[in-house]
Image 1 (cartoon, helix red, strand yellow):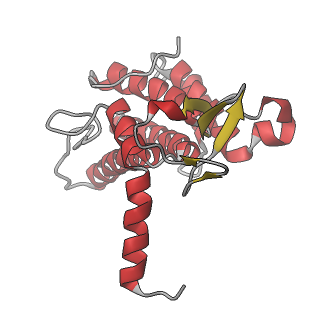
Image 2 (cartoon, rainbow, N blue to C red):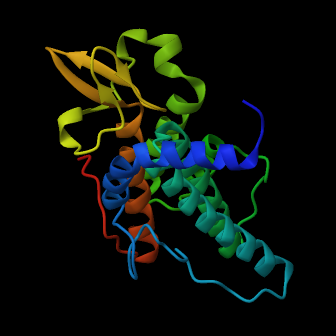
Image 3 (tube, rainbow, N blue to C red):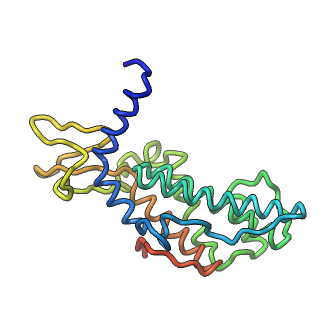
Length: 229
């Protein structure tokens, strides 16, 4: 296939059409679209006008938090759940730096998320959300460093969600003598066919803790919520 732009556009349209219904389900899980929807998002935190170096730093970190939130949502509805988890962990790292900057608490800008957590615990900062932050860091380590794959291969799959193909009127795979589909993972258990969403439960848990942090620190409310008690 050559790189004819029109042919590429048509291929993308066909792939998008295959995944249209499942993408609609995933968008609904994140609160849907429309005014006030927490997938459409807008800004999570209030913008500020910057004049001083401190204010510029706050503004840029604030902007980064919002972009990471939006990017995480895009990854979620495109079934890139491991990436969604990692982006939410990046968001929390940016959020910690934002809070330290606002409170005029100096910190080493080269600190990783784990180091920032230990720093905050030592300073007794963000104590109301530190457990949620620690949980997100655990998920980040699992996602980035392939902990299950390398250390506990018997646990590979614990974060996956299996959805029966029968849930869809227009499934992302075609079932016949052979299974076929673009960008879809399937499995058959007890004679039933399932679409496999790798790392989806991890992303859902990351959202749970991220929302707890945002609700506690800023009083934010959301149109979606994943229960991981």
